[in-house]
Length: 362
Ligand code: SF4
Image 1 (cartoon, protein in one colour):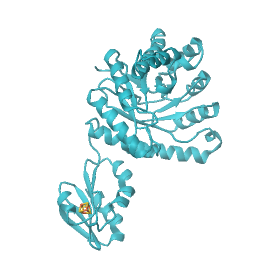
Image 2 (image 1 turned 180 degrees about the horizontal axis):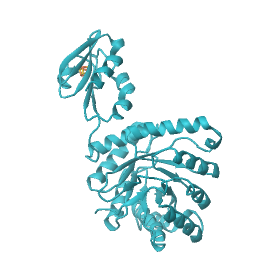
Image 3 (image 1 turned 180 degrees about the vertical axis):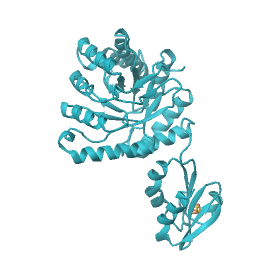
Image 4 (image 1 turned 135 degrees about the vertical axis):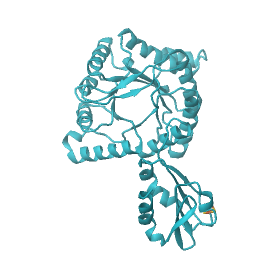
């Protein structure tokens, strides 16, 4: 089912990001630091802006910030004023924080009517979002379902996935009653099957855009595995308009993981494809270290090329012959090859410098 389009933006934003419909699946991450002290810390503001810029180059479309207090609400406005990255303010319990964020250029508010008190509070936030052209994201986690649904789950009357879906429907109904449809829904579980099922249930009946995520997915490797299974299953069924790989790791790794999932699911085209060998006893070149150093830089490049990083000359140029450029160990030397042909044989200490030069010449 084609979902409705939801505009992430605000009055001050010249090019709002459209989620849903036939638009590309967007990629998001969450900021990993408190921003409470940003109004008093210009150096941190500048660093935050630089890092947002790097995430944008890498392919990140949206960044969500936790907004637990008024200082953070002021901080997100200061950041939003100086970045083109659409920012989402993540708010629990206090609708006044949402109203404060709406004074700045925040593109979306993550808030659940069910946890901000009265319907009057929800109305104030909805009217503020409507006036400013700001979207809302409903975020349901398996750990915070309403009591009646928890009881039904405990009695085996419904599954947890059904409970997640029902909770999202209840929250969404409040927005619908207020005639507000600029919202995205997310239902998250740390269990892959539950994540898949609750999103399927929702998508069968409703056409609001869905944000996919496996919550508390875990450390880098385990989290990437869980998210890859959940997202690829759903994306291949046409479910999901925006994703976040949630990891106990850096935002950069979340974005790199998300990018790779989108690419492998055919949802994002172009850019640099890295093929690299796992390394073995034949290695003449530290593939792992080179990939660690170059991965983010290569992915941020706007070139549609394949780059091969291989440990040895025995298999390197052969296995990487389709690569536009490759680098491989050759006993005590390093070779650089293009489409399988060796173009440079160099000392390992010059590898980065010469590789960069050859890369730029493509
Ligand atoms: Fe081993 Fe060479 Fe293959 Fe890398 S390219 S896995 S070092 S044989």
